[in-house]
Image (tube, rainbow, N blue to C red; front, side, top):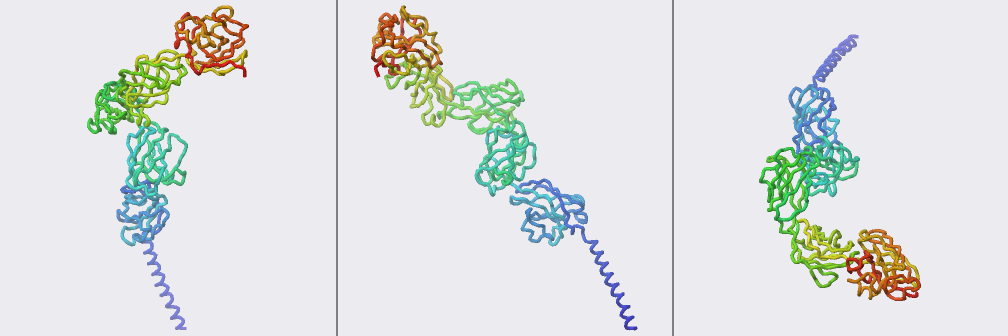
Length: 602
């Protein structure tokens, strides 16, 4: 029994020791820091630069409650990884550092330089090896290169180069771009939403490992602040953010100038204007340069600057006197017109382009038509089609520059020459339709326009269809030409009186009429028949009815019983059949192969 009692007496003592040990362990457990619980925290902002240096704020309930020091350990790991249980373990090889305690539930950490990617924060009791886990972020930070953009950006539809602090590690070809109004962050994925005032889309092309040429869409609004975001492609929800702007870009208003072209080495005045009143300074200034316009005016930081004297007209318009120093040794050259709100002030808008070229001049101009002999003047049919070569023009661009898009037009009156070619001081082209009469030559290049005296005469050339008919048949003639709007009303059909009558007349004639027409009465021998019921369709077309069962006698009287003989004739259009004196080329259509008409049995 003693043995039994002795044994039972010892067990409570041992049990007491065990309980005491357990209690001591419990005390130690209570003294252990609460961060062993791995508190969930949130971080802000959600985007940062690969260059590092950004201050990230974190918060989580009592995450730093039992950390007595002002600092804690911090590590950044990829968002797909898991925080290690202790500081300075492998932790996926990511960067470490320290966090600064603000209070028991929040603090800040400076982001180190990291590769492009998405990261989360791990917090530890200490930055020393073995520091226990205190918390981890449930939010992430997208780390991308940052790039500065012009504070006052280009006009919509323009380009600018974006150069980042880090490489576009995955970007090739065309990049996606979004412009987010009044935002500080970019979506992590490309979001090509419908154009609106909040998100607009565009494209960029990679131009280096850390640069891209960005094309600004014409949907951006002048004066609005935009965050610029560049993505690895243009596939919605799968193209990741590659780079974003460090600040907002405000799109400039457009500056328009008039004229947009001008003569080199010649002083003249142009106007520069904007759609919005942005020229607020009382003394704006302007530079004209073949280089880029500096963002602010200091009077010396532009290439070959030419200072234009500025007269302010309103808050949206100025007059700029272009100095004689603006020259070019080439057929054309482009200059930027830069307008500023005074010395030391910024550009008021996107620079306008002024194109200059050598001044045009005429000296001893000659014209040859269809390969004929050159003379001071030339002539051709009103419906056009004459190949003309004009010499004696200085200041023409070269043929190579014309092919490259240099400005060159030429016209007789208001009808352009088509298919222009250039050789030295000579241009060659083909006439287009024009009303009958003498006209001047006007040539236009980037220098402006120059006009000669009257050097080309359009005559009433016509084309008829059909150009054959059966003997004694009745046909409707379709007559094509030019300048028919200027013709008077049709004259009455000849009856028992001679042909003359006020208005246009259309006749079938033979060669004897043409040979005697100039300087003679319209009823001279050679009129064969009259095409009646003239109807004008347009300026270039009219129709009439030709009855080959009726003819005109030698005096121009209608001879109903005498049909038009079989043979070859011409159709002649007379712009006023009442005139007693006919002047070929101004009153009568040009007789040509286009107006030949055959009467035969077939």
